Length: 355
Image (cartoon, rainbow, N blue to C red; front, side, top):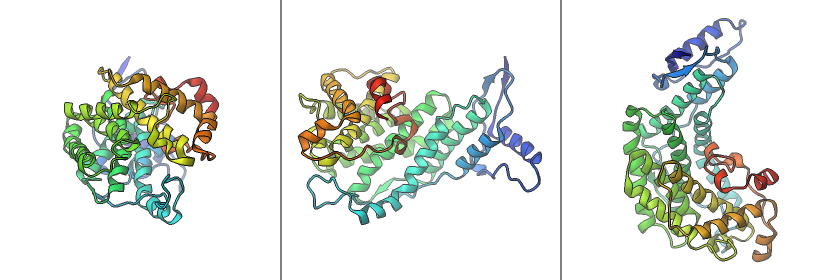
């Protein structure tokens, strides 16, 4: 075995070499933000293959182009607020909201794709993982998403930070987060966790304190708890699991999500996802959650997953046809139903027949 110390600088040097061999006028690589070029973790490999120029270009382009959000965010719901079910889009509100959060969501998915890179080419994988970490360090340096100026924005940040948190935990477990990175990230993550907990204590409404919003926030704060070694964050996260699983009814439904009318099936899946991921987060980190109404969670899982291929149960109870399922690609890689966080609680037979 040949041990090769792979750095982003070395990979980019290889990129320049490949570029020199390209035909005149053909651009194989784009410049990369110099702030993201740092030493990465050494990789052990047997005769490492030369980096694929196409894949390398893709990684470098993605890395250099990751959007950095501003500190402030002020959003409103995309749903028609005149309906008690909040089940139909307000077209104008949805368009405004998409313009506000679309770039942030795309950046999160791009970072997730970089973090999940497993190309079989160690140099490229190391580059991608380090780029994902350094992109989030830049978010931290810029104080991204620290100032939520509306209730909807504070609720929206919960899912965003859950996706970021799960991505960072995966990178940390892979050894891609250095001590220097952690020092840069921890104050930012802790500020968001503290603000999230305070919001759900005093700012969120009674419904949001008990529905899917709380579960997504719990996943976010729990991931931050593991990244920063903060027990009170992890405790708050476990409380979120219990809030969800202990209200599941005998038939496997969450009453607050069932009230969403045509969106009831989708919001059960939306609520199930962070609950299952949080359970996996604690399990993978050696702290399995006990005494959290697990029988309720199992009923929720069975009902929700059965509804993926057949929403008849939800249509019967709500009295309306159920909306189409959203694409799994709207989630970061680590939180899709086929991810390591979700598959322990999702039947592969059901998934293969439904997705």
